[in-house]
Amino acid sequence: MPVKPEWRLVIHGGAGVILRENLSQEMEAAYTAALNEALEAGARVLSSGGEAIDAVEAAVLVMEDNPLFNAGYGAVFTAQARHELDAAIMDGRDRNAGAVAGVMRVKNPIKAARAVMDKSEHVMFAGTGADAFAETQGLDMVDNTHFDTEWRRQALERVLEDRARTAADRHGTVGAVAIDTNGNLAAATTTGGMTAKAAGRVGDTPLIGAATYAENGVCAVSATGHGEYFIRVGVAKTICDRVKLAGEPIAIAAGVALDEVAALGGDGGVIVIDGAGTPAFVFNSAGMYRGVIDASGARVAIYGDE
Ligand code: ASP
Image (cartoon, rainbow, N blue to C red; front, side):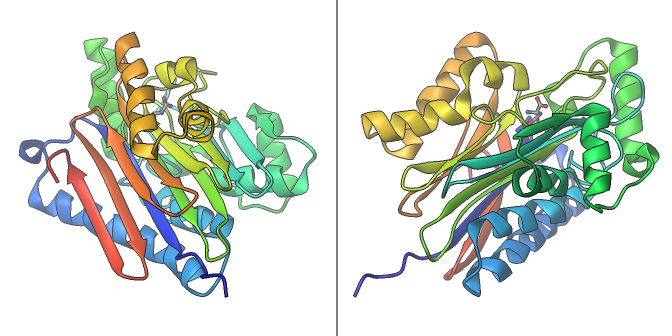
């Protein structure tokens, strides 16, 4: 009798200059709790025999609603002091995918991405058309100020004043990859982008093949980092292609892709899961909020030395 694959969920809450000396014990505890909550939301789906695609959506939804992360409520501000959100989701079974870019009114961009995948004949919607589509699908709509938080506003003011964006001004993108008990893979990524980004700027998050990719039997990837470089390298697809065509283990393939990002001047990280459910966290930034859960329990980490 064939052995059923184990389920497993891997998440990230952004990569960047995340150092112990910069994070208070209270903040560290808050991030740890938030990551665990997201892991448990996805695990509830997977442990009861549910699908990887539903698990990745459930996990990132929790983080979109948590102001600690740069996605949904708590997303960074654009230079015009508004929020333009990007999200993507991909199902490894048939490589069906859905994405939205620059949405301003849908409360949970990942739900809009899922609706694009399930309810439209397209893969990607942008701007006002994407919000309008989400509204026709009955998703919760909010005023753009719903996403406001004081600490992100202060970050905007600092960036505009200093005319410089630190790595800390863009981390916080969230993502998830999973394998379910039928061996299906899925990936989801959602973000507010970069603090003080120009109106209309779209990063790597909603681009299938850049920050998000899933193909059964190969791998699922969700990336976070300096989006322009991740787009130029095509990070997620590069990793999956190296696994598929060159037979590289996921950690090696991810390392090669991130080396390409670094060679161009970018930084960031990825979470990957392969067709057998092996997880990998690979990043070239100081830290990455991350976690994994399976039948044996949950584990979260933040810093580079964990
Ligand atoms: N990749 C995101 C973007 O460029 C930001 C991040 O992941 O930190 O929009």
